[in-house]
Every structure is written in C-alpha cells, then in structure tokens.
Length: 320
Ligand code: AVJ
Image 1 (spheres, helix red, strand yellow):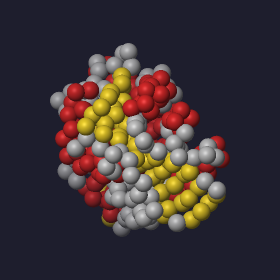
Image 2 (cartoon, helix red, strand yellow):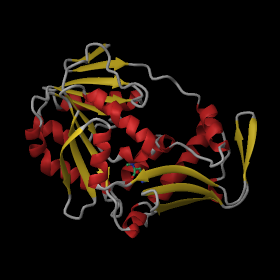
Image 3 (tube, helix red, strand yellow):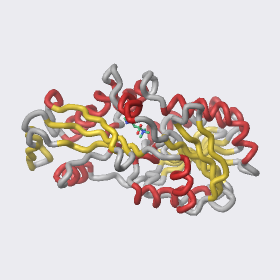
C-alpha cells in the first residue's frame, strides 16, 4: 500500500505474470485455434478500439454513455447509502466520470491489471476530483475478486460498463457475475451494461465498419504476437471476419488464413493451412429479460433497467 497523493492510494495485488508463449501455443494448437480477446489491447489496439467507438456504425459506447448521462440522477436516487464505486477493468477510468460528477461519492476504486494504465488514469482522476478518495488496485479482476485489507467498506456499487460481460462464455459469465456480487458485498449493488439483440445487419455493420478499423483491430492481435513472441505472422494473408451467430446470440470475430501460414512459437513451428480460422472474440448479445434472469441466477435482485429509445443497449441495476 502506497500513498501517492492526498487523495490517491495505490494497492499492488501483484497479478501473476502469465506465460504468454505457453498460453498462445496451447490456444493456437487447439482443435479450433483461438486467441483470447485480451491480445487485442496493446497500445495500438487500445487506440484502435477508441477510434472504433467513434465510428458511426459502432453504437454501443455512445449509447451507453448517453444512458449514463441521462439516468445518473435516477440511478443515484435508487442507491441508498452507497459511498464507494468499484470498477473492475477500469482502463482509462473515463466512463465513471459522469457518475463521479453527478454523485460525488467519497471513494472510487478502479481495479486494473495494467499498472501504467492504472497509475496514469488514477493520477488524472485524483487531480480532477480532489474530494474523492481514489484507491487504485492493480489486480487481475478475473482471478482476484477479494479486496485487500483496508478496502472492506461495506455496500459498494460495482460498475461494469461496456458490455464487456458479452466477451464471456455463458458458464464463465455465470461465475464472473457471482464474483461481481462478492465484490459488491452485502448491501452493495451492480451497475452493468449489456448490449442487446437486434437485426443482424446492424450488428454486422458495427463489427465491419466501412473505415476498416475493426479489421485493423482484429489483425492487430497478430502484430502484437509478432512483437512479443516473434511469431512471424504474415498479416497480409490473413483476413478479418465478423458475423452474427444467431444460434448462440453472439458476434464472432475470426482471422482467416488466405494461404498456408507458417508461424514460430518459441522453438516450435506451427502450420495453419489455408482456410484455417483463428477465433479471436465472442461478443454475446442479450435480451433485457434474459440478462435479468442471469443476474437472478447469480444471486442478484434486479432493481431497474434502462434502455435507449431504439433498444440498442441496456443498463441494469441490481442489488447484491
Ligand atoms: C469491448 C468487448 C465490448 O464486444 O463490442 C469492438 C470489443 N470488438 N469491436 C465488443 C469489440 C470489436 C467490444 N467489447
């Protein structure tokens, strides 16, 4: 625990460093070659994602932001005696600003695996909100949901925006939601964004923007691996694919080999033959009723849900 400023404390839970080579080797050699979506987000990938959120086709970020802006007061009035907001995977901590502005909680606790990202973002927040105490927690929120000593204020609001929940498979999702309930604690609540099912064409457009940013974002996972592990992917012969799988209610993103691809994984080589697809992301789409039922199954009591007039996106509030 380190005091970095009058209203900024840093907790390093030392997320275990993972063996990237072992992880990537295993997932690329699986019967369905896969890469975890976290590999999108190096510096280039994070800035590409940022640009995606500003394309006309990618509606989720701006729709959620306008819901948060519009209903911040109403959400606050439903939260009784909540003084702390905790945000797993807070990243740049930009989305929470509208809530901090409107609510002036005493405490904000971002949890983020990237130390640099966390330090930069929480220093900026601490400067901009001198009356809010920031407890910045460096942790892998998928592994550690338990809070460090000294951070056990009861009744937290857990904020999990962006429909990041849609990246999890149903089984993992159920477990993750239970983890969020632990993090909220008794008397706490959850405010979570969930992207909604809609006509396939609209979903297709959001993940195949005309400017090619989503394609570049998807392919960037390979540039990232080339840089970190020297895999030697030829990205010119890989193609971005994104389509809606209506049986499973999810957008799938893949990278397809247009010709045989010989890559290097440490001392071993791997051939991906022409036509092979590397599955890079699932982005599940929900119904309001379906998502509420998942919250109930995880032990929450849903208390309110807000959607935009076109029913593009939903914000759910639930008691832990
Ligand atoms: C950040 C996971 C919510 O699923 O829409 C955007 C990621 N992928 N375009 C999503 C993403 C392609 C995004 N999430």
